[in-house]
Amino acid sequence: MNFFYTRKRKNSNFHHQLLMVSVTTVIFIASIMSDLPAQSQVNEINNEIVMELPLSTRGAKIIDAKGRQVLLRGVNWFGMETETHVPHGLWKRNYKEILAQIKTLGYNLIRLPYSVQALLSPNISGIDFSIGSNQELEGKTPIEVMDLIIEEAESQGLLVLLDSHCLSDKRIAELWYEDNFTEADWINTWTMLANRYKNQTNVIGGDLKNEPHGKASWGTDDLATDWRLAAERAGNAILEVNPNWLIVVEGVEKNVPTQKLPNHWHGGNLEGVKRYPVRLSRRNKLVYSPHEYGPGVAEQSWFSDRKFPKDLINRWQIGFHYISSQNLAPIFVGEFGGRKVDTNSKEGIWQNEFVQYIKHKQLSFAYWSFNPNSSDTGGILLDDWQNIDIPKQQLLSQMLPVSFSQVAPVSVEEDTEKNIPSISPSQNSLSPLYRISSSSSQLAVSSDIYANWQTGFCVSFKILNQGNTKVNNWQITFDMKQAAINNSWNGNFKPQGATQYAVTPLDWGRIIEPNQVRDVGFCANKVGLDYQPREVRVKSQR
Figure 1 (cartoon, helix red, strand yellow):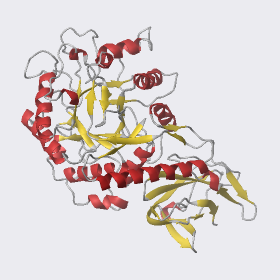
Figure 2 (figure 1 turned 90 degrees about the horizontal axis):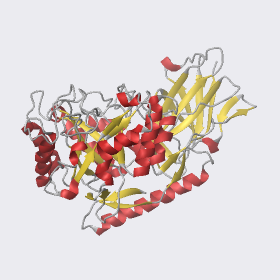
Figure 3 (figure 1 turned 30 degrees about the vertical axis):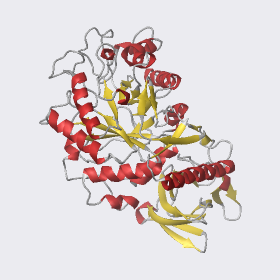
Figure 4 (figure 1 turned 90 degrees about the vertical axis):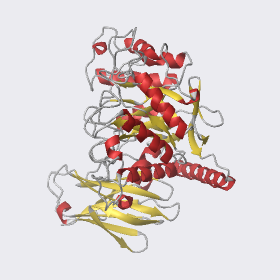
């Protein structure tokens, strides 16, 4: 069950308006879905109900303000913990488009990593301010960029979990104080954020420290290393400022008295919770969060065990899931991911097993990562920052309210008069994916609406030269009725009459070599329901 959310306010008009928007959105999506071919990428949207914030916990469940169970299904969108001090990908895309795409795929939460250094800095980089709404970010500080991303996430119906990923921009520290940062620096940053977003209710809490490891311990009562005690100090300080937040506590790597398993991932060892639980002033705000990876990140002994993959379930039960199965607290898997999702490689087998485990146990999670530029895991996005890794999203969709199945290649019809391949209008669907068209002609074009939100959408056209000789010039035409283009890239978009547009390449993109793909696109404001581009055609101009 997927949830929208509302702020708990006395303003009943606000609730009424948001409910009407939600109902209208569901009806609008349903009307679109009824027109799509049977093999559309997005072919099932479960009923959605209103989630009332803030969230809290009851036993092993995360619940909303009305006591209904909530499953957090999220992605990690990283970058704010690096030297750019903003989430990555903004050199390529509008931040609103990225958020819209996350929502469209069925996720309801973003785990947003940051560094303490970033939030103390006035400087940002890695943004193309000429791309759509990114112009709003120009001249902003990192914390002001965070403000705008959180506000837009709220408008898109997305929750945000803040993640103290690093102290400095350079590395993930073993402890919560290192790299010339003190414990006070760390806690003061958290209380500042808790106060800043006290009324921004889609910010649901804080993941206190990413992946304690090395010297970090649990249950040792050593004030210098016992992460459990530090989590109590920080968590209680946050709850004094903002009693509505969830306090998310990761495990350690080792140094847990009487731990059963000899090895764990960084942050993945929660064996100490049974004997040494985190004690917060508000017990119903505590969530434990392991991280879990496969051999693509690092080879571990259990991947070579003769019982693999059957040994995995026992590891997960001992390492963290006993907390949930014994009804002690909820589990939120803050990170897991990998490049391979097949059923032959060790990483692919591991990832398939873990997805099934999360689904069966009804655990909340945030996948690592939405970004494609995680060197060891890759991401849900491909390297162009626009298109989706189809097999990976198909696997993850098993845990999502929006199912995701690959369609057959887009059919390309032949225009016998002009010898121009054209995409059938019925195939021009609300797809976030890149699909290569097939045709006997030299050029083929595919059209993807890869971002779609209430008031606008973005389209990518891919032009493939499937011949054996280069094309020296080309043009796309398409019809579009109830939309107004507000920005475009890699091409000149010019209206031809009331509803037709012609697209010609920029000088550097006129030549398309054999098997080469050119990419052009635009974003537009919706002015009615019939906004989708149709009758998309491409021809070479010699």
